[in-house]
Structure formats: C-alpha cells, structure tokens
Image (tube, rainbow, N blue to C red):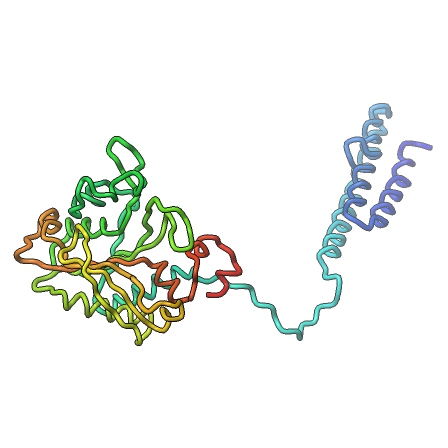
Length: 334
C-alpha cells in the first residue's frame, strides 16, 4: 500500500471515533490519538521525509485536507456534547411560578440608626462625622476631662501608641469639638458612629458599640429645649407611651448634667419599671472656651446614648453579642 492509500482509511477511522465519542473526555482522547503531538496523522507527516521529492506535494495536500475535515468534525462534535451537558435533565415547566432571588436587608443596628437620624432631621438637625482614631485633645482635653479621670487610663481606653497617645475614640463627643472648631454658632448636629472601650464582652457590654450624640448651640438655649427634644425623639423611636425622667448626674463636659430614664410597655416586659437610656446636660462653659466660643453669649446642650441599647429594647433582644455574630437566623428576623 502506497503512502497516499494510508490517508483515507485513517481519516475514516478517525471520523468514526469522533462520532462515537459520547463524552467530552472521550472526545479529547480521540483528538490526542489522531491529531495530538504523537498522534497518527502527526506520524504520517513525519514519514514524508522518506518520500520521493515529486510525491511530497500531493501527500502533504492530502494530509492537510484530512486534518481540516477532522478538525471541523471535532469542533462540531464538541459543541454538540457541550450543549447536551448544559441541557436540563428533565423537562422545564414554564407555567410553574418563578423563584425569587433572596434579597439582603439592612442590619438591625443600621435600621435603628437611620430611624434615629430621620427623627432628628425632622427638627432641623444635620449629621456630622469624624475619625475613629482620635487624639487625647479631642477625646478628653477639649471636653474638660481631668488628667486623672478613669476614662484616660489604659484599663478603660484603647491607646494605639504610648508616644503621642493616639486612641480609639471612647465616644463621638470628639466630633462635637471638631465641628465647633470649624463652624461658628448656631450649630444643630447629631453624630452617629462606632466607639471603643475596654469592656469584657457579655450580654450587655461589648468592646465596640455604636453611639449617637447630639449638640445644639445657639443664643438662649435652655434645659427646656433639651427635655423637649429628647422626649420627641424617644417617643418617635419607642412609641407614644414612653415616659421620661431626668436625674442629676456628673459629666465633665456638661453642667448641669443629667441621666435620662424611661418607662414604657417594652421596659415593663423586661420586668423593670424604669431603665437608664442616655446622659445629657448643658455644655460646660470650659468646653466653649476650648473651642473659641464665648460662654457669655452662647449656650447649648449635648446628649448621648447607645444605639444597641435602643435596638435591644425595641426588638426585645437580651444579648448585645447577637448583633455582631452575623448569624443569618438572627438577622433574618428584621
């Protein structure tokens, strides 16, 4: 049998093998057997060197035509097998109801924060923001916090460096100082944000949590303005049946200072009549002096409370750690 007579039978055998391959893996095995680096058609090409010079053109043309036909058949067969693999294994019922994609939702703390912000916007407050890594000046000094105050101890505050003592802010009051330094009165802001304290995690404490603080500075601002604002916001958040009471307290950056307790059906469900919820007071004159305000001309109030505390009361949650565990069984409730 001549060299040219070997090409056609080999091509026919390869075509049959390609058609018989019923998986992509078997199809690739056939490709390697006939068209691969060590395949049978590659072997024919290597034999052409032994042919007479005048026989080589016809032999080369015949081999190339056969390879082209095999390649075309290979591509078509691969496409058929890929389509078969992608086709559904059972008939599709196009009349069946569709399946909706699951949609994500806002975290419960985000929901509560946005509700708080929405309530304050109704009465003219703007939202301010600031860095979570602060200096002692903004977090303590400008807020009239004494050098020996327990909050400045490394047992209570996360200090990042012992040299210039940057720290993770313990409250968002530092933003109040930044805003007053940059803007003249009147000022009416709220400051939501994450804060950090060296607490041991338990059902009611966490080393990181969220606060929202408010500041109102203008001429002739009184304690009555503070009480009216706080009452409006808490009734917006926790229902019209909320009752508030104000108790004398001490904060270094307000004078006089008060703590706020509230009572509602939600609190009574927890087995209590009153629950502490916030601290507040009139801005201390020293704080005004530290930011360049004249305390004889301007007065103002400030307050602060924890967002987690509001969310726990609102949703009847007994363990603050549930907010941070990212358990979908918990988060899907909201």
